[in-house]
Image 1 (cartoon, rainbow, N blue to C red):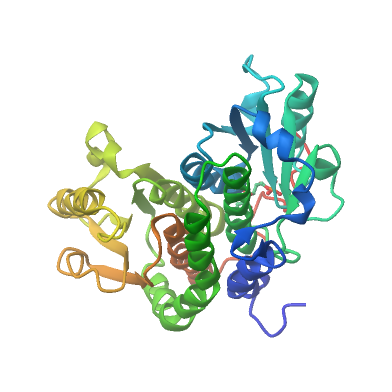
Image 2 (image 1 turned 135 degrees about the vertical axis):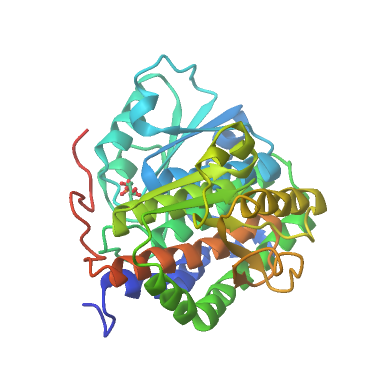
Length: 369
Ligand code: F6R
């Protein structure tokens, strides 16, 4: 039931605030992270020396975002691997390796096979999954469910923000168990976390119509590029994936620092480029780097659509359009900046008269390898 929305995707994007709130619920106690499902597993988290995330598509991008949090808060090194690549080399894994799988459906065959392979090699496995009782969590030593609610549209949206939420909780949990993060630091992150649903709601309220209008004007666009740095990089990849699958156009995401190593040759007059701009409050250096990337592509005629925090005045004169997100802590920006990109992909697909819920050639659950 679309509940009055024009598509399941529109409904599910509108549920992104609840996906975060519901995934947090019951997992925070007295200013600390307490995940009931992980009780009794402290030794497991103490004994690991590395984490490997395995997932596909959008779920893999959630893993790329979470890498920053697990390394910062838990001080455990993280590699993120596409599940279908993992098995076909000879990965160095053993009992000190925690393999974290991420899957909305819990049935993705590529991810399931990676989990089974990891178990056979003696690694510990933990599943981040949105579907109670699905195959992947059943094959894993531990489970942290995302509570995004059923996702019907083929393109994953609310599950993505729920996955990042669950992974961040896991990062804080591991950090607490290992004593890698101070209690007041955990409390500060929890405070950030609790503000996220309201901030996503604000983006939906203030920017959605504008972005849809803007997508409508861009209906003839044949290629869109996305640039990001740090946690903005996986969000650039996610923005591009959504445009490919929903609007059937060429779209590519890059780490902004890669521009001068090749991709800048793609920039010709009129080329639309989305740029995820990190807050200048967190790192003046990172912000300045991205602003200078904007200048480089703009000088070559790119049409720049910046996603930047409210009040970032430096971006305004340099970009053709600025989509605003509320202020948030450095690791929390992705939970906000992805929302305009989801809206844009949905808007462009709709503007082209396509079926946003059922893009061609794709299935919601990919149960073949
Ligand atoms: C993109 C998308 C896919 C899935 C991927 C993994 O919008 O939906 O890339 O994220 O197929 O699916 P799950 O999470 O079910 O394992």
